[in-house]
Amino acid sequence: MHMTRSSGILLHPTSLPGPYATGTLGKEAYRFADMLAQAGQKLWQVLPLYPTGFGDSPYQALSAFAGNPIFISPEILADQGLIELKDAGYPKINPQTRVDFRNAEKFIQPLLLKAFKKFNDNNGTIDQKYFKRFCAKNTYWLDDFALYMALKEHFGLMPWTAWHADIRMRKPAAMAYYKNVLEFRIRYHRFVQFLFSEQWMALKKYANSKSISIIGDNPIFVAHDSADVWAHRELFDLDGKGFPKHVAGFPPDGFSPTGQLWGNPLYNWKKHRETNYKWWIDNIRMSLEQTDYVRIDHFIGFTRYWSIPYGETTAENGKWLKGPGMEFFSALKKHLRPLNLIAEDLGIMTEEAALIMKKMKLPGMKLLHFAFDGNPQNNFHPDNFSAENVVYTGTHDNDTTRGWFAKLSKARKNIVQKESLLSDKNTEYYFANRNK
Image (cartoon, rainbow, N blue to C red; front, top):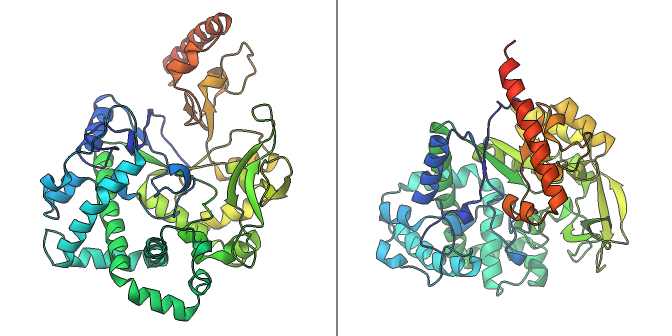
């Protein structure tokens, strides 16, 4: 992958300012793109945009393909004649303090339903043919997702393992029955995804017109209670009732004495191999259509992953299992070009993962918060960077840089100030001599 030397900002749309319980893809997003352009920035990285499930985490999403409806801008819907802006009002929340996922969902759903009803009646400015075209292009994931969401509502938002056995197991008669009974809600959820896609792709086009590239983010694992697992049980390590046999996590280390128990179901890599990794190829292809680059979370997990028996309360009793490795990335490269991926290679690096990154020419990540400790051999120190690195101050797991620095000891602050100045001198030397 070729990435021109450039800088930018990591900011999720939820953090955009505005009058609602969360940021949206409306005028505040366009203003942010303008601000980036005026500041000479070339990159805008976002975290996953999926509809959130457990804990409102995008890493526990209801789909690995769908967009989160809370990002849909009421102002744009009003401009399209689908709602009146007075219908929106303002949620009773201070938008300057924190994102409120629950209020955001409660607020947007009635507006989306009004928009859908108007659209169904051929009101507004959206041509029906664009919706039909979207549905036809995305049928490979959209049909299952829309049905899953309608069923989830029908069964009181319970996880799919608690639904009636016939539809839980996707029996043909049950599938036909519920598609008929829930036809209105199924079409509604297709329409919501259409709105999200239209607004997001318009924003991406605008950012690109300002010479700003978008960096997306793909988690390696999906949530158990998701459309993907319900629709493709064979691709996951599940028992006969649909529950995980083993779940994902990370073993005990210096940061966590009992390890990290993520709880996501593991993949049945044998079945993925038999399908030539079609589900993954579809997923990454869509991500690369929606963004210019994609950061692959927990990249090392494709070479080895920590398998924990389902039901464990900590990650201690797990074991390492081998992932699909180079074969997986070769399959991606065969079908997806250019393969603009960034590897989240933090943690304990494996030789196999390092070799894959080298062969596939995938840049890795460096964090400045880990850099300045007085050790000149520190891999995170700017003096040890190469062109194959994407450099961050920290990740979404870290404190802000201001908070990080404030909590350092006086001795460590002195090291940071001294070594960062040395790095500045090296940077000046680089720019002064790069054309010689």
